[in-house]
Length: 216
Image 1 (spheres, rainbow, N blue to C red):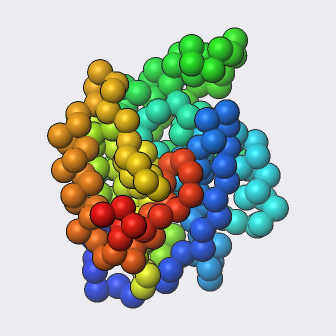
Image 2 (image 1 turned 90 degrees about the vertical axis):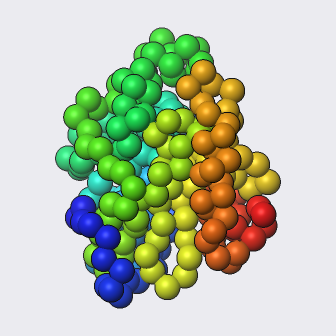
């Protein structure tokens, strides 16, 4: 499933199901190979039960969970998904400190007494790593700034697609008012994304999809 970059392989475009979950309306993406139904779960928000139901309803074959970054509203559903499907979890190592504090942060910001923890066993991914699912592939690109370990995921199919997490939104960009955020790094990350074709569809961590051309 996890491979080094190989641009000579012909890949299919994935099927994408958007599930908006949690009190902060985070976008969870079920990204599936249309031929095999093998699926990568991007940012499971905080509703692992609902996501699990959808996976079973659609008869998908989940392979892993990937966090675009470590904020609690993108990761809290991962424990239930791991328990239900025994899935590996991937994120960038620079956001490991955030998932370690995700439960505590959620309790504070959401004013809840109980919040599920994030599994402690995770695997780190970085620039250029390939996630293969059936005849589809996603490539990891590092897009720090909003958080130190923010990543985006680029589809290696025919049509340009990027899952941008909280780096780039429709008519907006990621917050940089956290103590660990770096505005200059975010600007570099945005310029990195803006090098992709204008027709590239961007699926953000919140809100509606956009294109690179619309955000230039």
